[in-house]
Image (tube, rainbow, N blue to C red; front, side):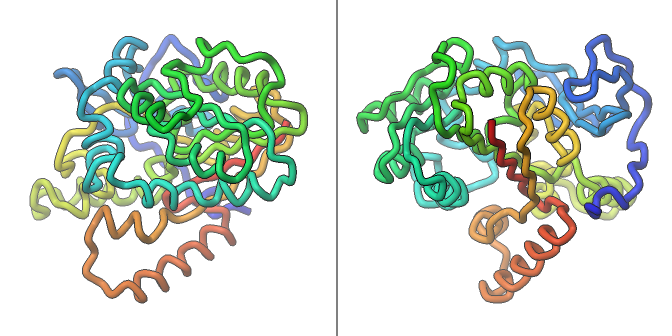
Amino acid sequence: MPLSSKIPRASTGHPHSRSEACQACQNKNFKTYVQNMYQFQEKKYDLIRCASCGLVQVDPMPSRKTINQLYDLPDYFELDYDCGITSGSYFENRESILQRHRYALDIFNSLGTRGNFLEIGCAGGFFLDIMKASGWKVWGLDLSKAAIAFAKKRKLNVLNKDLYSAKFKPNTFDAILMGDVFEHVPDPVAFLKETQRILKPGGTLIIKTPAYINTPTFRIAYLLSRMFKLVIPKKNKFLSVLKIPDHRIILNRPYHLYEYSPHSMKTLLENASFSQVQISGAVIQLYFFQQLTSFPLPTFLLSLAFHLLNLFSKIFNYPLGTMISIVRK
């Protein structure tokens, strides 16, 4: 039994009425989860949580125009691609980006056949480069004009379009990756159905999402920060990394529209007619944690701690930063 199912799902806020139903379970009862989590253009956004399945989402949901503006900002890939908390731009962090997607390369290359591959949210195309070198025929999509221009300079087959406007033919791809992308999608069920349409029978879809804010770990940290807010200095760096709103160095923009749990992710995938679903939790990679915090402990101690946390995550199927869904059509 997953550890998260043993922890009570205590209410974290007041009832919140909505006309739109939950994307995962169609329930219309929500509760306020975190107030003033994000801000963009003087507008603040809360997080609310479905009272039935526990799916967490931004409220109000940004319009498509606002979402397009977010990724077309000149500073997104220079400063904001990791929510503004890692040093350097996307273009300067090639090795870090590739390390994050190493798991996907290993899974796809273990399939045997190396056919057509699509990366949704390909950014500047670093992972497409590696897949192409491994023998795959690659395509990429991204909403950022700057990222697509960067990828095209390296002769990659990329489009500055969303999944719907790309209009791929049915059963086109043998493998599809959404790495740290699905949480940015405003219409997850429709998006998954379109992905299912263009995936070949027997094809593999990998979805990697952050899995922290919608966990008891975050809820405990958030409640403790509120209990001791009078003695904790504002803009605390460690609490900022833990994404506690009152301590964010920069009030975050609403990039992450949904925060998934294994239960809500499985429900969404089944609603989109995927039947073979494998979901596992993991810890954020060690190098990424060091980049976020510049933690002063020796590397070998941090490495040991992360190996133990990873073991805990796998045994109890409890995500500690990351969730990976492997789906076959």
